[in-house]
Length: 256
Image (cartoon, rainbow, N blue to C red; front, side):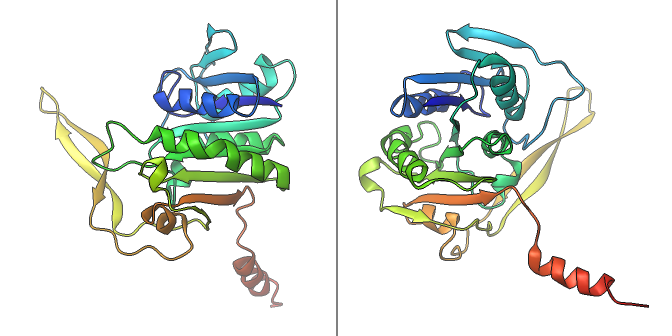
């Protein structure tokens, strides 16, 4: 099995090495193509107005000056002589649950693999204020290979990727695996943090305003992580809301 590994935290991120180790637990044919620099929050973006710069870091390890989506396309369409059988994106430093999946470059890497018809997984390791400096990478490393193998053995539908979030705890504290739906954050909103430079000119950071979260809805990725369970969420490329589509069809199909 040929595996392409990518991420959004950059070619030198510790989680990328973890992801490569996960891949090597599954196969000895592993290729790494990752962004030259941190691309967190770029979502499923393409570099259309700037050239892609490619640098070979070492054998089968490449850095691309571009987004995770660029990296997957570069890996599949240019670097690898034969297309991969699997794309692993991560392991992200921090969870990619709830609305985070729409911002995440990690999820986007797996999404692009899925667009190209390749079974793809997004892998993320949650952390808290206490573990931020040293996330529990061993948790992802311990559980990911078996989860990926089991899902692949079952077979993945076309146009579906699997988003896996590992809880903020050591491997021996994991309380099992939960197959979940995409959740919704409670009282955690993006805000604008205004500041001033040395000349008195304003500039701005997008920041998180965090309050004490309410209890997450049962069965979601957020609730699983809160219970120290691994969250496994299938995500479809098709974003169509069929119930509302039916409503709109009845609205616009009405004869004047």
